[in-house]
Amino acid sequence: MASPIASITPGSERAEIAGWVHEVRDLGGLTFLLVRDRTGIVQVTVNRKKAPAAVTAALASLSRESVVRVEGTVKAIGKAPGGREIVPDRFEILSPAGSPLPLDVVEKVPAELDTRLDARFLDLRRPRVSAVFLIRSVVMGTVWEFFSSRGFVNIATPKLVAAATEGGTDLFPVAYFEKEAFLNQSPQLYKQMMMAAGFERVFEIGPIFRAEEHNTTKHLNEATSIDVEVSYADDREVMELLEDLVVSVYRRVADTCPDPLSWLGVDLQVPERPFPRLPYAEAIEIAARRTGEPLSFGDDFGASAEKALGEEMGVHYFIVDWPTAIKPYYAMPREENPELARAFDLMHPRMELASGSQRIHQHDLLVHQIRSKGLSADSFEFYLRPFRYGMPPHAGWGLGAERLVMTMLDLANIREAVLFPRDRHRLVP
Image 1 (spheres, rainbow, N blue to C red):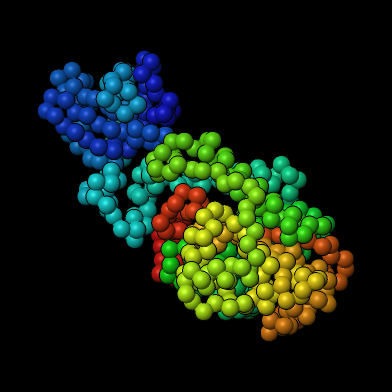
Image 2: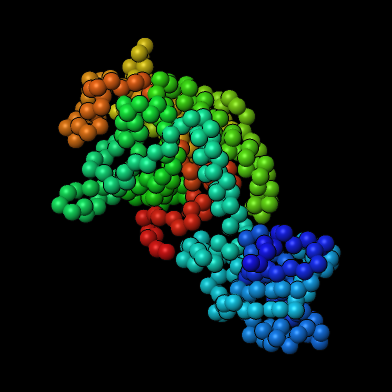
């Protein structure tokens, strides 16, 4: 098997590599190739007068982005990538690439995002693009390790459901035999049911679907949600858990991804704990003052208000003490002031990252809150039933994986944090 390029050092005597032809420079008697795999780039130098005939013959039909296998002697050379080159005595074209290419992998000719997504398989060959997904892999692995090390149980909940999680019309209907079904907006109802099952601490990493007709740089119709639910916990405790997770992820990426971060030009700074807690009432005042918009208590934050708050705060922060009226029916009202909920949003200066709350665990109060939102309690009978038979107090949150990666790496568009994004216009590739 061919060795990864990153393992080839100037001290090596021989090496065998395989990868894509990144660039070809023909200087008459000398041909210089840059061959790339996911670990890096190495220079291959062919002296046409000295190279075996089979090697020079292969060069005659070589095109950029062809897949090749190269075997030869490793030499130290200061001007080459990584300070080394391979002088081949074997050169095999495993798969030739057609020409012209749908986009320029070398990035000498820039491409719009839509062009890149149409030829995503080529776009992902670029180190600056693949770096995002190398880092995303580390992020998701860190999330898994974080919760597993704390005794959480990993669960998988249905993505085909009969009822909306939070009501509303932002649902994708699905033909499900003779029944009406929808793609799930959130695992919320099911992870709460796991509290009634006695699992106590659960997490899920899975897809969610929102049929929202947004066309912005921060919305997707299929996204990945990192969800948590904890028994015998309140809103304060799960906020601290969320802080710990975000800091752990940033620290792991900073420690283990120097090359991908360098390819992206990102100087990653690990956030400092604790994140500021900003009461909703103060947030409304700040946003109204900075934007000049007539915002009042009970309004949600639009894009301009979010931006204004981010500029004011400058770091990760929580908005807390939200009005009960604008939070989901399962958010616990505060005992001392039921108009406020034990609910929070985690904010990056650019956008919202996560939303959570302490949940209502009392059956009758939950039914009342469902009805107060104009929803039918009968539609939620499968969800309400566990609350009649001993439901522990509990709290939790959902964190958008793509938004976490997007803000961490300062990406311009959330679609850059998804291999194959789904929005209102894109269903292929």
